[in-house]
Length: 336
Image (cartoon, rainbow, N blue to C red; front, side):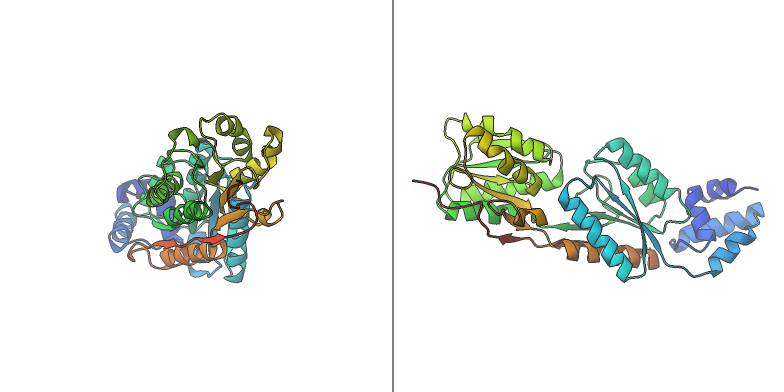
């Protein structure tokens, strides 16, 4: 009898059965009983190599899946997770999806089908990933980090308070005296975009300011999108004096492209970003931003996925970390 037959009889994936028999995966008692029963009923002989592997101790191997390494936020997050893994004697492998849904699915398949990988930290940029859902249902320990993914409510999740961060940024611009504040937002289907958009709108309402729907622009989290928004801002009936950008990389594009449209930042247009990437400190002017706790995100995600590997039946973990406003030079009171 083959391992495939055992997996079919136990109603689990082949990779789940293999990792369990190798001692590399802890499953709930019901699943373990089904696999053990299938092994006995089918008289499957566990290979000697697998038995030896189950007796060996080794450092856990965690897969990290990220959208890209061009966006400094994802690069800094990956670096922080790698540092945390090294400090915890965890081996880390990194997969980059290029922000493509197809590659997100194929990497999820690859990780779930590997006997060597013990768990996954998943940073997605698309709302859905059926392969990720299947991997979680098959027992792979997964932590969904940053972006909410549909259908993964049973997986552990670590995120930040995007609503509060956007509220802080927009309120700060209103306190400086700005009355026409634009919002250059991310893709509308993403949870981060929706939460930041909601924070922007609530802050505007609480400041007694009207939202001009023509000044709410959605696009990808890229510097190219940031550089492309000026025709929409400068041709508006009431030109904005300030912008809350839903991502620092978008704000970087705005700072780079403003001069081409005859604008000075912050004299003609104040800009506040979101993420707190290190490059923001080197821009001219330095970027005012809402900073993510990258080191804490990395450390927490690694701790949670390790805990899930050791205790697969423990209660689901969901943590939301705060953002804080970092005031620099890209936002000033509106010019008279």
